[in-house]
Amino acid sequence: MKVQKKVLSVTLSGLMAFGALTAVSFPAHAVGNGPGTGNGSIQTSILHTYVEMVDYLKTQEAKQPAMDLEVIGQTVKERDIYMAKYISNPENPTILFLTQQHGNEQLTTEGALEFIKHLGTNKSKDILNNVNILVIPMLNADGAMGDVNFSLEDYLADGDRHLTRYNANEVDLNREHDKATSDMEPEARALHENVFSKYKIDYMIDLHHQGTLSETEGELVSGSMLYPTNPNVNPEVLEKSKRLGAVVFNAIQDTGWGHIGKYVGGSGENIGRNGAAVRYDISTLLFEMRGMSDHYREDYALGQKSNGYLIKQTIVTLEATVRAIADDSIETVDASFWDTLPEQKNRSGEEADE
Image (cartoon, rainbow, N blue to C red; front, side):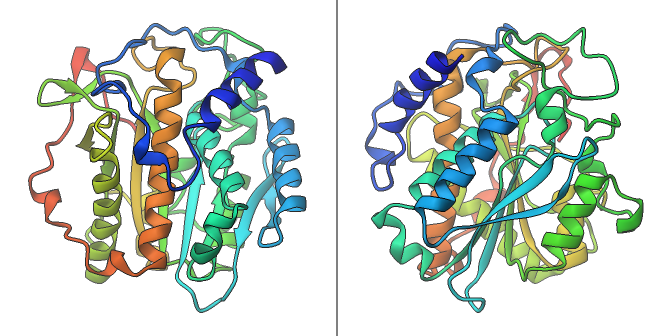
């Protein structure tokens, strides 16, 4: 297991240094129409376990003077939920990156961990002077470890564990956000009480995975995006959300290997991008990467061959947004692309389910 993970890390390390992201050459549309569509062969042993993630975060905290590590709560199975914090000035704009509300959507977590490492380099100093960054790399640790109170015998992944969308109580954490905090599952309650209510957050990107067969214009997407769609969202919050999406779209489309569609999602306040926008006036963006790390449906589970591209896509997303916030370019970016961005369609009856 350690050998496999080391190979993945070495392979990715050359891709992810800040300032070199767009310089790497990939085949055109390697994520969108590349290999590995829906074959269900995922080696979960190359992904960070919860314990390995915690060790990684603690190592980075020891190395990085700008980083603080905070436990924001516990999961159903009493695993600590960690958040990496970079707060140089409380008056700076603040962005939250949230991953693994769904425990079987882990490549975004792998990208977030690499992003945290690179925030400790000298190339990040100017960024951290001008924007505050919060990263929750694994909200649903029980689901990510397959430590749940229901059967996963039909799940497809190979390796040392299965990963599930739900938390240990078989609850979808991304349907909790309209409840009173006292009625939420422990993971969602920790997010609301100790992050949303505690910090003045201006932006949030909620990182997820979708199935493998979503397409626009006949081409499989590498990911899809959506701003908050609830009618109670403040218009200014909505406009800032659309500009956040424009930054991400411009960064990924320019790579030559990314292909982005408009996600077709619900408008309920129970969904994270809507609930955070309505309750806290946070400008939010849902970003759905292609393919899940595990699932009981073969058309949802993505094989190994696109992993590097998808992790890199997470890094591009996170870096582009913090730079745009730090230099204020997000305030003037043109968000009109949303008017013509094609909505993704799903092959073989696959349904969107953020």
